[in-house]
View 1: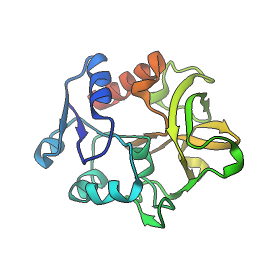
View 2: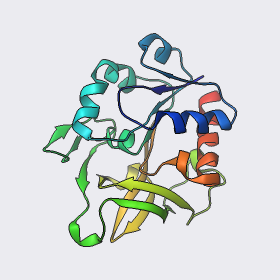
View 3: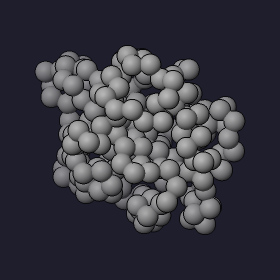
View 4: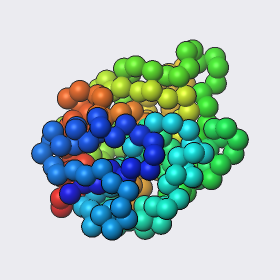
Length: 197
């Protein structure tokens, strides 16, 4: 069973439906005991970094010490960072070293919203059968700056920004797989396969 953590933010219905669509039992919960028994954990995310971290406090140890695969989506991925500049400087989960920063104004319209391409810079099984240059769906004003060793994909929007990260059992996507058509479903199916190993 894949657990989607209900911590007061996130696009719970669409990610739950998408994971169910790829043939996996999925449960939306804030019950720590259910989270502990899961085969995989999903941190969705729509909203502000500070309030998300506050809401996540009861589950932060469960997440940081998880031995199962953990998938962070959009803000959920940004929470993996050491810190974020959104609304002041705030500490993240520090699972992947780096800082979340705002796009510079000169890149164009902010938030970066709509379909854009990913450039795969590192092989990972979560990207199996995903073609380099695939289009996925973004909605965000901030992006994750981290070391190259943790980067899976990059995307161009005025600047080259990190659009997917990983470290050990933690995988994060700045875009929304659940809104990214067949490409997104393939990514979620790959994540489920990793969880089932």
